[in-house]
Length: 114
Length: 111
Image (cartoon, rainbow over all chains, first blue to last red; front, side, top):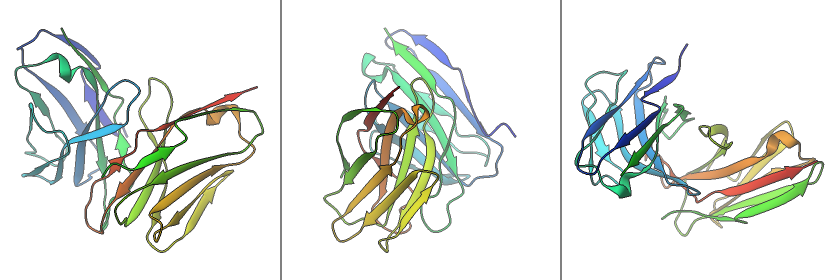
């Protein structure tokens, strides 16, 4: 099994451009998450989804949008990129049973906004 | 709401022990521990649920004191492979389904 797959692994954007980070998982997990990690810092939750068609904001949702049309896919959209969005983005999935379970992370997408 | 980890960094020689603490100002239902090596994704270590349990595998164990809203991760007889940054993630209530992560503790093991 591939687990959680993120694309692209690296991307450089100019200020004001938009892009979508792709995330797909093949473990049939209901829960999916997007985190960002700034250098030397912890993980901040951007958005999460508890199932297809259901999404909710995390700690730092401003400047981002998500959708969840299928169980497998959870893309993250960056609109009007800003230097403050330079970060490493991790997608994760989990099969929660009444409470948060083990998170399976993708390899990360390193985004630089210049 | 972000849990606070201490220490921020620790340097050990191989074979020494380490303790990493995670504290919250709010009530917790569960505490999760992850390890992240440089340039890689975090990897799950263990979950501790409300009830003051202890868990462990190999030479890494953890405890959770729900009354103090604290968890501690214990690494005994540390190995070079234990090097990395350790994060605790906290869940404030059952069913929250999401974690808030601490800022991390960087552990360096030298030969």
